[in-house]
Amino acid sequence: MSRKKVTVVGGGFVGSTTAQRIFDLELADVVLTDILDGPPAGKALDMLESGPITRTDSRATGVSTATGDYSATAGSDIVVITAGFPRKPGMSRDDLLKANYDVVKAVVEQIVKHSPKCIIIVVTNPLDAMAQAAFKVSGFPKNRVLGMAGVLDSARMSSFVATECKVSVENVHSFVLGGHGDDMVPLPRYSTVAGIPLPDLLPKARIDAIVERTRKGGAEIVNLLKTGSAYYAPSAAAVEMVEAILKDKKKILPCAVYLDGEYGIKGLFVGVPVKLGAGGAEEIIQIKLTADENAALQKSSSSVRELVNVLGL
Image (tube, rainbow, N blue to C red; front, side, top):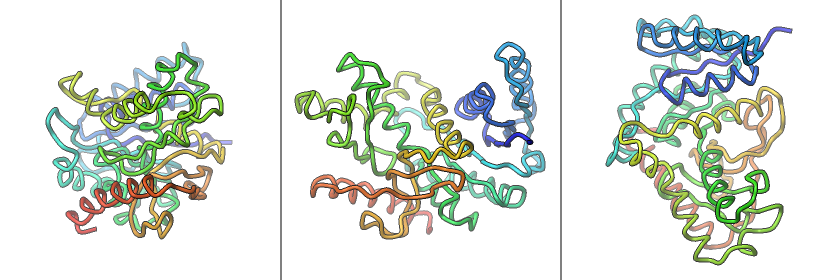
């Protein structure tokens, strides 16, 4: 049986770390692309040469797409799009909007041509709007275009909860809905430690502090790094989604998907719990929200809609 093939578009920190994780886990053969000529091939060769040590038989290839040639990506099962301009200190996600829309549009047009049956996972920010752009440009069915955000936001929340409770991260399951921005909706009521709801373990003030830090998780790292943004956790989050799809795990993860009336939201990419399997987003899980939680989700989705309207999507 031939190995699966995953293309990672964008050879920066997020893209190259995503490619490395897929390679190390032997999930698929990896093609790393970038508009730069040289670095993607160099990174892929370096990765390939680590194979004898990590006992990995996957193949890694790096190609420049400066000339618009995406032929090396042909027949990919999954394409992860990380290409785009990074967020700099003091820069809002919205500032990135138009510049990254042009990048995503150009990439998706090529992907559709060379891998018409693939599943697209968008990582480029502003995440929800870029997923919407990829969906519109690709013409793919809604189950085959996903945005990576909720897995990352939930992981950030889980790491803060585990630290606060002094427990293993394996015991913690956090739940974050909504857009990938300051209006995201962490749900403590649905977040658990060894099955115990968070409100039963921590006082409200501590939970509120964790929720606030989760919302600002990306900005906190941007401000510390000074140049660039997070990549270890974002790449791990993207790879969890890739693995769930390639292994047909039917794993429920929070992802940005196209809602068609679910949660009272129509025609928009918003983060909700999704069952991921070989078909991509195979089922949207609807949970009961309190009036406050629902109001927060609607507020978050209206922030996403503003961006989408700016792009005319």
